[in-house]
Image (tube, rainbow, N blue to C red; front, side):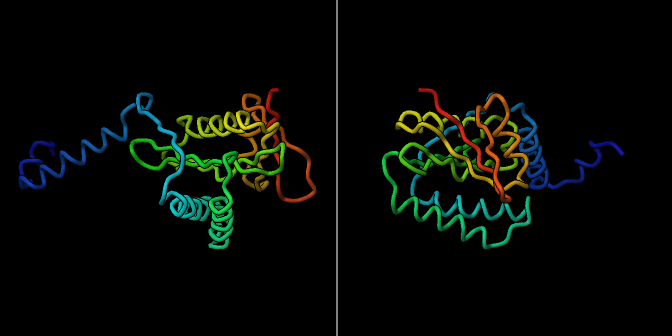
Length: 188
């Protein structure tokens, strides 16, 4: 059967829908290099959305339950209620949509903690996570921190593998529990 004969049977509205669908397919398959990623500080509405996306992604990819939502929500509430100029939260937007987030919070006087690093699955493999982490590390250095701490769960092996890759300069520390502590020592 020829495509032309299939299209002939469509109504004008169906033809329009078909063209729209094909345009969307082209958008999705278009080479990604030219698309701009915008990284900005958080604004009203972002906090709830970040909590939501963490819950959805971690449930889908790792089987987490709603206890994780509560954990993220408590940390984010504490961040907003006690935010200082030495702390910040960034949002990455790609194709005019939320693509990810990362934050720097104070761990102690000399150590920043990298938190809420997440990248949407369709935005991965495009350097967005690297851009977010670079933004956070630069901010930490600019604000006088000597190191950046990344605390994660051991079974999130991809995070540990990424974070300890030679290019990132994060280094894992040995622990006696199911968590990994990874440090990045900032240059003086």
